[in-house]
Image (cartoon, rainbow, N blue to C red; front, side, top):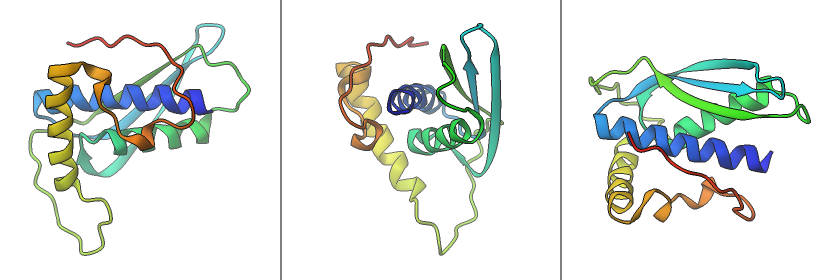
Length: 142
């Protein structure tokens, strides 16, 4: 589960980065899983607020994985996507919001600048990696 969590985190980072680059946010997080027979299955969850936050995308995708996939059933590959995209970021402010989306937008912007200059894996949230980070991966910058 730790390796799955790391992969989903990296995928969420890439998706969020591309969304911020295009200036869009979305409300529907989709996770697709391919099994050992190369068959895809997936599920999606629609959240209340638009986001391009890697933390929100990761947490939602991991929730989907834990809800629908039964380990130790083998996982061949994973895909994370966000849909219902918009450039309209108006939001109803709640007195009870714990996650500060505006503060996260500023942090994400700084991350994007560092990644553009020093590479995709040069900076990450510490909570995205649990234990020893041992995955080798390649990012596709489109």
